Length: 133
Image 1 (cartoon, rainbow, N blue to C red):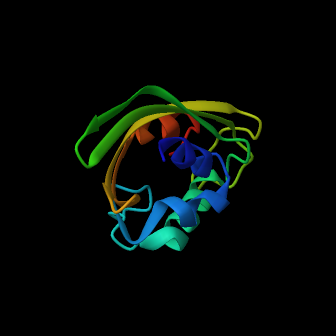
Image 2 (image 1 turned 120 degrees about the vertical axis):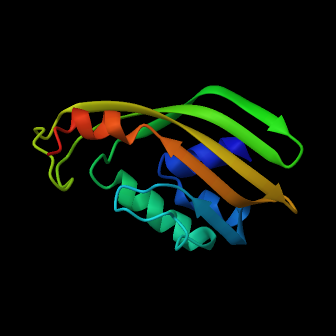
């Protein structure tokens, strides 16, 4: 399931229906100021991933540590690298700038699908690389 999770974040949206519960919900401090509570189910997650990937069409996630499994919970640390294509609000970085940032995902599994997701990403590093003011 975690391999499919990473493939989904790498743009293979067809993975979502097989691993995401209709009851899926997100806990995160998002760049738009939201807390992720509006992200529900496979379609909601795919929309969120598409929005995150939009300024970085070649964004690639790779697992750095993990997975660590504890009962119904799985955690991993990832690194994402991509080329900025433009369109990030407030960014002064030139298109073509390569960015790298890290984060941690914790997922809860129920009945063979992910039902809950905690995201902790180093967005400060990302916005610094994009020269967001």
